[in-house]
Length: 151
Image 1: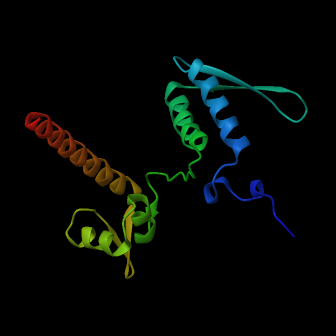
Image 2: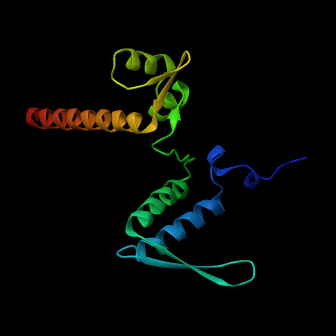
Image 3: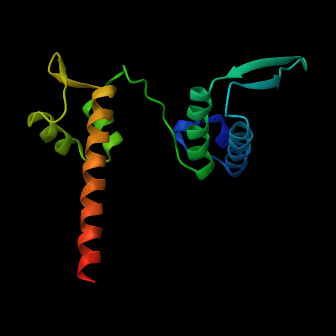
C-alpha cells in the first residue's frame, strides 16, 4: 500500500507544491496585516468563524516559518529550553558529531551531562550559532573590503 506524502509530518519531508503555494499565500496575507495586532478569521468544520489575534511578534514568527515552507525547506521547531543530543545539535549546526564534541571539549559550547551523555540546551546552541555566524559575516566583509582595495 502506498502512503500519500501528506500523511507524513511536514518536518520529516519536503513540502509538496500545493503546500509551498499555500504557505506563500498565507505569508502574503499575514504580511499585509502584520503592522499591528492583526485579526485572523478561520472557518471551522461547521462553517463557524473563529477569530485569532496575531501580535506582531507572532506574525513575524509565522511568516518566517511560512517563508521556509514556501521555499521548499524542511522545518523543525525547537523550543529554546529543550535539551538536545549531540547529534541533534550537530545537525542544527550542520557539522559532524565528532566536530561538535571537539567544540564542547574546548568549552565553546556549554553542555550538561546526563549520566554519560552530553546534552546541550537549545538556547546555548543558538547563542553559539549566532556568534559563529556574526564572526563569519565580519570576516567575509573584511575580505571583501581587502579585495576591493586590491582592485
